[in-house]
Length: 209
Image 1 (tube, rainbow, N blue to C red):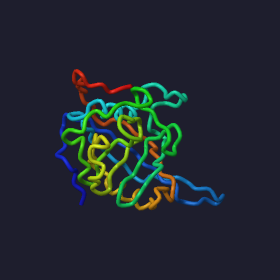
Image 2: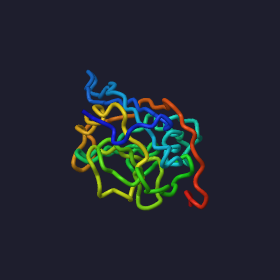
Image 3: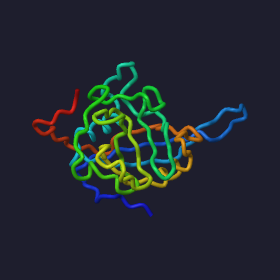
Image 4: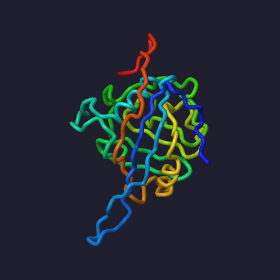
């Protein structure tokens, strides 16, 4: 049975994904979509409020558009990279292949901190920022399906799965060693279940540029 890595905090925000899967062939030879289930997350506003806010607003939508004109919203985007016994990656709502995405602060923003919870990938079910090196956070994220200590202090951990880890495991089973999913998995809906008051960044912390 899955247990979250950290005791949930009522003061932290909670968001959700509804996940759909295209794995059934119709009479016309095309694939139809069906609901796979819901995943609910706690975001670590207490540790990384700027990073948590980015993800929360991308779940909510309505924060404007990316430079290519696409809405800053996870809804309708796919999980483009799934490696069993490692992680599930998504959040590229501009290109859908891992080369795009955009944060609410601009295309990229800096690593907020690696202190405390933000620096440790010590269990399955943690939510972390995907990046292309230091200080290149955008909208892409991944969910760990095992402990990933080699990623510690290289990717910012900003949340955890609260419920729906069975959905995460079902998604993991559709992955491959090269990361290409066997089926199309989509965020069919997403949103905010409970908000949090986001503290301001500490003086002297530069997050952008």
